[in-house]
Length: 231
Image 1 (tube, rainbow, N blue to C red):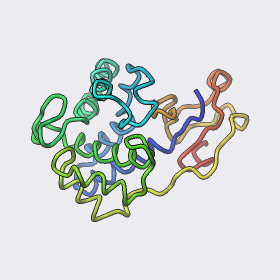
Image 2 (spheres, helix red, strand yellow):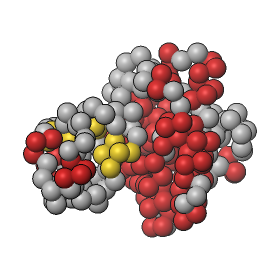
Image 3 (cartoon, one colour):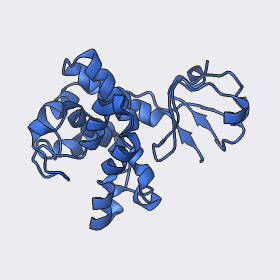
Image 4 (cartoon, rainbow, N blue to C red):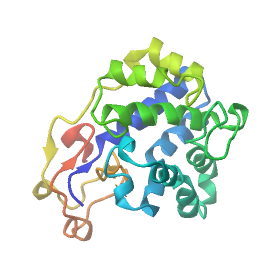
């Protein structure tokens, strides 16, 4: 694994949480949505890396269809963890569309509100990072792309929150990196560590030991608040 990126998933998690807060959802719902955002692409583990190593627009029709089936793999991975059922329901339904044209053709009323929120937060950052189109977009451009599908792929009231409250978008991107040589036994992660494909490698709260430091080929350990993410 190279270039482990922690901030990208954390920022998506942050946007999901802020959208949920704007909708006045309960603390429990906000926590479930936030955690689902961290795990939402775990299903990619079941796909060929060629399907997520290039922008979505460069995939052919069949490849795009397979990419959207990642939720099935997420269910296989997380299904045994019965205590995560609310989060799993959000992850499974994240590619369903309000107009009913998603993989399982669910209506808006059948799609969990958490999945509706996740879809907006997920694709905002995918646009920002150049994972949907051929180039990375500015905040304004990314919101513009989402607005094109308001009511089709994305729930109108959630898009409207993003348009009316752009200040909820975090701008805390990576400013510095922690070299692997700086890791010490006993350091604890305050943020999740993810690959460049946004797959969880080490969870928040992990305590580094000799065993978890030495095998890891991190060229850089990047963190949402840089060195302060290690205690």
